Image (cartoon, rainbow, N blue to C red):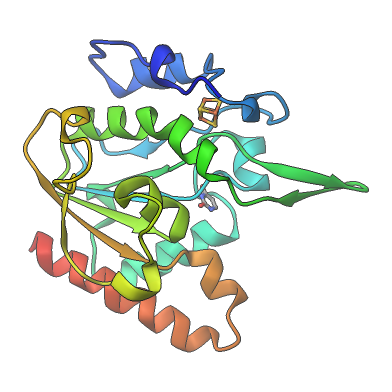
Length: 214
Ligand code: URA
Ligand code: SF4
C-alpha cells in the first residue's frame, strides 16, 4: 500500500478538516470494501486519547468509533476508573473496517502490519491537532501503531511510557513528548474466559491513566 501520508492535508488546521480528507483516503485497500471511513470523535481539546484497533461492524455502518458492544464495555470501564468522559477523544489505529464475508455475515479480521503502517499518518495527525497529555492504546494493534511491531501488551501493559519513543521517528510528531500507556482491548474482555478478572484488569490500567491526569 502507498500509505495515508499523501492524503493527509499538509497543514491541517482542524480535526474536521482531517476527517473530511480521510473520507478520500486510498492509502491501503481497506477503503474498497468498507462502508465508510470511521474517524475519531470527541473533545477538540481532549486531554486523553483512547486508541482502538479498527471500526467493527456496527461502527462501519454508523460511521462512528466505539458505538457497538466493545464501546459500551469501554464506557463502563472509563466510568469505573473515574475518568471524566468529556476529556476523551476516541479513535482507532486503522480507520476502515477489515472483514471477511461468510454467508451473510461480515467477520472481523485483525489488521495486518501493512494496514497499521499505512493508516498511522491519520493517527499522528489526530494527535498533532489534539496535543493530548496522555494516549491509551487499547490492545495489540493500537500498541503496535504507537510503539512498533515488537511491542507486547501482555509484557508492558499498565505502564506509563514516553511517546514517541526516542528510537521511533520522533520527527513525525512535532510537538512535545507526551505519555502513553497500553492495556487490553475491550473486545478481549468480552472474549475472556474470566470476564470479571479481565474487566478488573482493564479498569486497573485505566486508573493509572486517571492518576496520571489528576
Ligand atoms: N473496536 C475497536 O477497536 N474500535 C471501535 O471503534 C469499535 C470496536
Ligand atoms: Fe486510508 Fe487507513 Fe482506510 Fe487504509 S484503512 S484506506 S490507510 S484510512
